[in-house]
Length: 281
Ligand code: C2E
Ligand code: MG
Ligand code: MG
Ligand code: MG
Image (tube, rainbow, N blue to C red; front, side, top):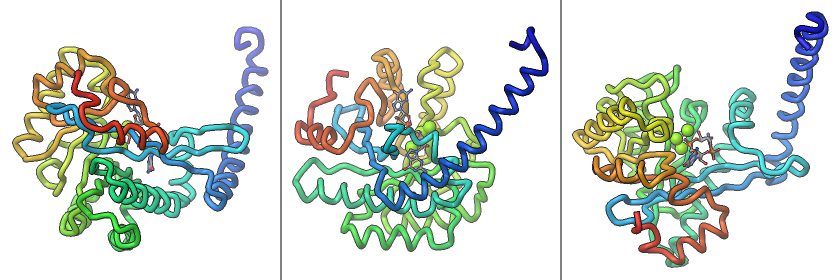
């Protein structure tokens, strides 16, 4: 097309842009409706103790079950939810749903796990964030040490403010992970400055496990251990990757090798089977 007619190419792109703006507006309206009509679900991905093979945690991951488009992954609507402010009620829904579900599984006598919930920097910046979390724990009845909040480093990271909020969460007994570590605007000094409990190494380092990335992974694990932090490797897909991580005494792993994110029923089945499920690795 480009070779054939430059103008037509231009038109083509202009239409594309208009189309995507309209689509964005439509999606935003639909997102509002979806929140009111319960079109969101949580899936759960197991986190595995590398030494024992036991499930230690479940990461709650949101999906939008769209009435006509089907299952929409978070990458396609979280940024828009953040832009439009909808992330505040949406994030609250995620936290409430995850805590209520985890409490129910505990009450049902399933193996105790930690539930990990992703927190957007926009939520984190709200002055009412800590009281919202506290209120959710009280309402759901979930003990604080069963909750793990995953935060990401972002450009607008105010270390001082972050430190204060995290300190308050830690005093309540909540665990805090830094997610996607090594990718964002991270500096190694965050690990020592922030009162964290867990570090999640981004899947990109694990999946592209060449000599260089191997050295980075090794460095993060060593540093985290020296700082008494739990290390979780994300996006573990192969036995080879798992063996490498095990040789470095990485605490936990998460990824398709062990399990994809599961819906509520599948998660319950997995928890019921429990125990030595993953010890083959
Ligand atoms: P994340 O928190 O880093 O979550 C891990 C993502 O990696 C998930 O994608 C998961 O399905 C995917 N994953 C897990 N194992 C593997 C693997 O072995 N290989 C590969 N290639 N990928 C794997 P998902 O569910 O599409 O979520 C994407 C991102 O959306 C999350 O990244 C998180 O940043 C965000 N997100 C998900 N749920 C929520 C939520 O409730 N609130 C907020 N604020 N963000 C969320
Ligand atoms: Mg996460
Ligand atoms: Mg991550
Ligand atoms: Mg990620």
